[in-house]
Picture 1 (cartoon, rainbow, N blue to C red):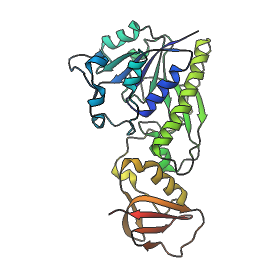
Picture 2 (picture 1 turned 120 degrees about the vertical axis):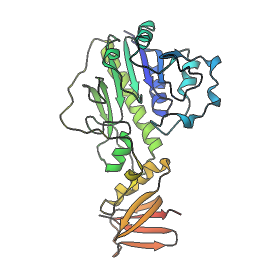
Picture 3 (picture 1 turned 30 degrees about the horizontal axis):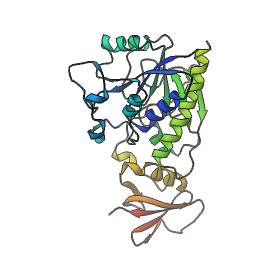
Picture 4 (picture 1 turned 180 degrees about the vertical axis):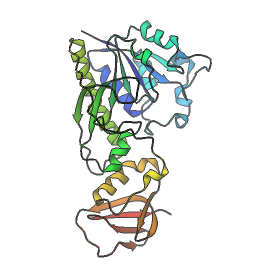
Length: 311
């Protein structure tokens, strides 16, 4: 059985990757629904509207004006939808009857969510017969929230992965459909980690959809615990010499794309680091830090990191 799908996402690498994988599956993507903020050709008086290629010059709009859900905008999901003849909509009001009407109009038997930044009302969740499935780049219930890859890098997490779960009216709390471990290699950028998680999550989503289409409903209540992590702020780019060197290295490599300086306090001195160069697992300096021109080597616990000082 082929499912007709509506995909809720954003104009970002994560959503685009999930869409591309769904297009290669046996299921049919009937509609793509994006938040209206920052999109071209959007009227302010409509709760939801179709976006047509002849009325929106997507190449000319400012992608930097989009709400920052993932800072990594790649090939536009708008172009993909138009090229494949998929109905594309910009939504302003998820609770409006017109939004539910769109799902009914395209005969969506299930909805998939990948990096959609807004809470979906309970009434809308009930519209597709097979419900809503979200692809989340962490092993829920850990790292709920809008930037799970950032926080996994920040914590030096060794158990990373993706979750496909049924959605409820809260963020990332619905029952699990399936999970898969996705190890992140040392030194990976957040852009590459996003792509890696999206590809693994999209493949897992298709497996879950195949089960659903066959009449099998994978459904497991989330274990107790976990916590919601907010969107990062400047203070979240602070690192500590009490961290292992590997953790500092991976966090700084992984989040360099944000363009933020990293604050670290060593022996009472606060330093600003621009980027990390290398790390050693077992090196011992015999001092808290060593300066080498515009670089600094910092004793960690254990190991050392070498980084550039911010100018």
